[in-house]
Amino acid sequence: MTLSESEMLMRKNLIRLLIFSACALTLALVPASAAVTPTCADGQTLAYYIANYSGGCQIGDKIFSNFGYTGPSGTGIAPTPAGITVNTIDGTNVVYPGDIGLSFNGTWDAEAGQTADGNIAFQVTVVGGANQLIEDAAIVQSSGVEGNGQAKVTENGCSGAVYPCTQTWGVVTVQNGQVDNFAHNTIFTPTGTISVTKDINVIGNNGSAAITNVIDVFSQTNVPEPRTVSMLLGFGLVAGLVLRRKFQSVRS
Image 1 (cartoon, rainbow, N blue to C red):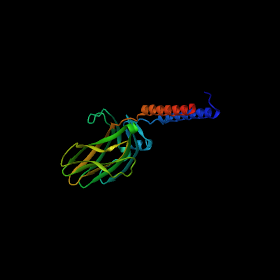
Image 2 (image 1 turned 135 degrees about the vertical axis):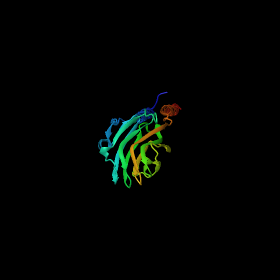
Image 3 (image 1 turned 120 degrees about the vertical axis):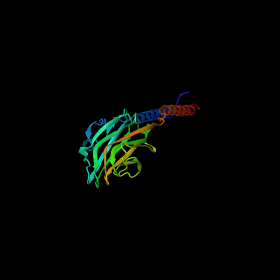
Image 4 (image 1 turned 45 degrees about the vertical axis):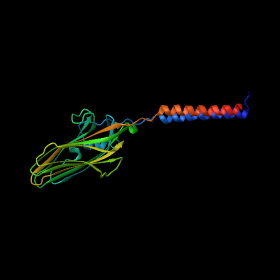
């Protein structure tokens, strides 16, 4: 049976539409190229991180960005950003093996009647995007007190880019002569990004208190990947059915 010109034109347009749709779907499934994220420098100061990593730096499968510091304040000893050393935790930390994070090292010290305070802020995003979601985090605090001094780290964590974040998810307090207390908190519904603010505070009272190190580590859970292969197969099946119906209508 010979096809008419209109039927031939319809057939050509349908084929072009299917080819265009297939190309568009393929391009949508290919991730766009992105700028290379630098590796977080181990042993640099927080001032360096604030100045150089506003757009983020990477450790393992996580990107840390938007660093900030408020302080120092109080009558005791508290560091400036230039006095805080940042060490990277790449999954080999003995306390939380497999977790990724940052260690902030400085001296917050308060003798009797003194206080010292500083606030560190940053954002952490898992590289896996929708296929990897952060589900828990931990704080580790190295500190010591004498008498009724108090050393405290209050950690706020919010899902997404939220500043200021006021959702407290972890508080680590050392008092009454304790040393090196730490806490692990399972927090929030799994999320791709967390905004963190930590308030590092020491109060001497009638004794003394000091904090020398605060660690943040994060771990995530896997979520099912999009069934891209199933999408393509489904698209091909639908396209085949459309072509078959068109050809049947032409031949009838």
